[in-house]
Image: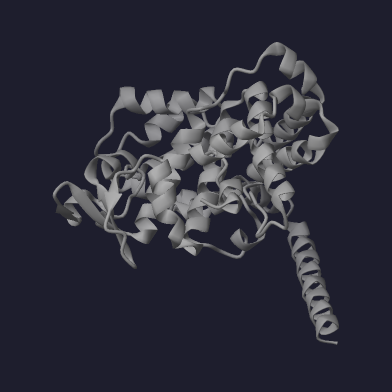
Length: 364
């Protein structure tokens, strides 16, 4: 695997081998001026994770830039482990996994190497398909909700399931998410935490702001009529006896919890589901509330196929809770609705003009 690829997938075993050869101690990473860029990049990385927009360099000019990218991942793990918030760990793992999925689809030549590194047993990598061992398929396909993804609908020969590149990319995404999430929090010695104390405090501040925006917000009286389209559809499906995919069930429960609905009320909302199990549902709801999980961002909802019925407000926000908050504001301040929309239209127009001017400058 190229060094550039190792930098984009720093959780793979090849990355560990590369770093071990450099002999860089955690203490040196935390304090040396030589790694200041890596430490700053780590914090920016965490900010991107929490905003739902983890970005990485499209290319690298030299090995020094590659090293910064890899070390930033390692330092981010140190900071995240020190903060030790379940929601942050989950978000970090998910965003890294989503980035991997999107990158693999743009460069499908990476599929064999990454699959091998993750321990997948596979063969017959064709132009548009891969044959993967059924045990790996079962293990990582639980989050795939399309009926065509069920193994009964797949061609199985000698224990190998033939799937598309898109499907193997989703399996790789899930494998990476699990690999990262279950490896955190790592045990960070007290003396190392002391060396990183300023950066740890900065990450705690960033995370607390994130929680304040979406978890601790006082939404007041719950108003189902103002829910975003995706959540309304999920509730309608539940009431109609439709079994929700695990990812949509998590989104619905976390959304209802985030806006202040009590655990018993959330549990009762699922009481019409054909597979309703009070003990199981109670455990899931209590687990989400105990860890203060946040409802997934819109980008994540899209990735899992849970975005339905987008309207004009959806175009302006990045999170279901942002949608609900906005609708509440407009319902309480109807006189401000036109003002806000006019301001947004003006800003949109100004952006378009700026883009046009920049394009004209490039041409000239």
